Length: 107
Image (cartoon, rainbow, N blue to C red; front, side, top):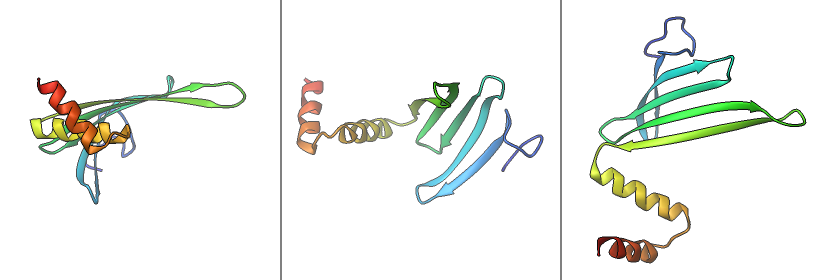
């Protein structure tokens, strides 16, 4: 925890997480217990910022729905290209498919 007025997760709280991918700083920008909403901004140094919204809703038969929205903002062109390629691979596209798509987009 870098900063928290109460010592707990709250709006304005700043914390850092480190793992095998690096060190990331987070800010809780919204924390609404009554509406079951929380929002984070994640900073990935010299690469990107991520806005993460999480909203819980009552569901049927003692269930809860969790709505999650990510907004990625790349800070460098190379990051944009890497994100795009990773996304296409996650969709099951091969390197050849990606290259063919890249050629079509350039033309």
